Length: 349
Ligand code: DP6
Image 1: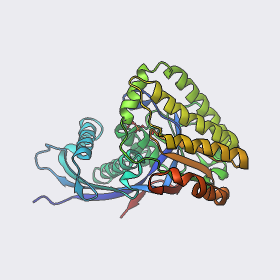
Image 2 (image 1 turned 135 degrees about the vertical axis):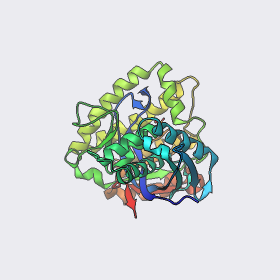
Image 3 (image 1 turned 90 degrees about the vertical axis):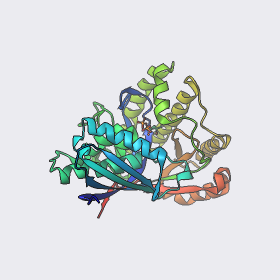
C-alpha cells in the first residue's frame, strides 16, 4: 500500500472575458490579447494527493469529480498531465496522483468550468513542484498561469483576481502570450471594482461545439484577420475606459466583443448558432432598458447562450427590479447566478 507524500488544495474562480480570446496563433498561444474579469462566487475546488511510484513509470492518475469517477474528465486530465510530464514537469513521472475536484456552481448552469478547474489544478501542480521539489520561482502565480494556459487558454487568467490581461500588448509592461498578468490597480479606476455580473441562465444544455474546436475553425474563417485587428483596437480602447471610468464606452466595447464572438461562430465552416431566441430577447431588452433609463448596464456572452449582465452595484436596485420584472421569465427555470468582481484563488489548508 503506497503512502501519500504530499497533498494540496486550491480554490479558483471562473472568469468572464470582456475582450475575447477566440483564435490561436499556434498551440495555446492567443491570436490577440484578451481581458477578463475574475468572478467571486463561481469556484472550483481541486485537491491533488501524490504517492511516489517506485519505478518512475508515471504519471498515473485517478480523477474524481464530486467524489465520483468521471471517465470523460479523467481522460482530459490524464492527457494534460502526461503532456506536462514530458517536458514542463518531468517530476510528475515519479507519481501516482489522486485528484478530486468539484464546482460550487451547478454543472448544469452552462458556465464554462474549464477556466476555474484548470487553474485550480495548475496551482496544485505548481505547489507540488515548489514544495516537494524545492523549485524556486521568480513568480509562483506566473508559473501557475503558464501551466494553466497549456490546459486551457482562459484558465491562465483565473490565477489572478480583479481585471486580468493575457496576451502580449505594448500597452502593458510584462504582458505575454505565455501567461496572464493582473492589470494593476493603478490602471483600473476604482469604480470597476464595484461591478457585478448577474448570469442569466438561458439554457444549461451542453454546447454543440467545444471552445477548442471553435478556435480551430478561426484559421479558415474569412473574417479572422478583421476580427484580430478589431480585437487589438478594442483591447486598447477598453484599457483606456478602465483607466478613465468611461462606463458608457466600456459597455459599448464589451457588447461588440460578445456579438463579434458569435458572428465568428456563425461565419465559420461548419457554422454554429449558440444563441437561443431567449438570448436575443434578453439582449434586446437590455438595450431598451439602458436607453429608457439612462443606466449604463450592458452584457457580455461566452461561447454559449447565457447572458452576463454587467453593471455597477450602485444600480443594483433598479437592475434587480428589471431582472425580476422583465428578464427572469426568459431564464431556464428562472435561474440566475449573482456574482461580482473577485479576488482570485485561495489555497486551502
Ligand atoms: C469564448 O480557454 O476554453 O470563453 O484554450 O482551447 O481551452 P482552450 O479554449 P478556452 O476558450 C475560451 C473562449 C471564450 C473567450 C475567453 O474566455 O476569452
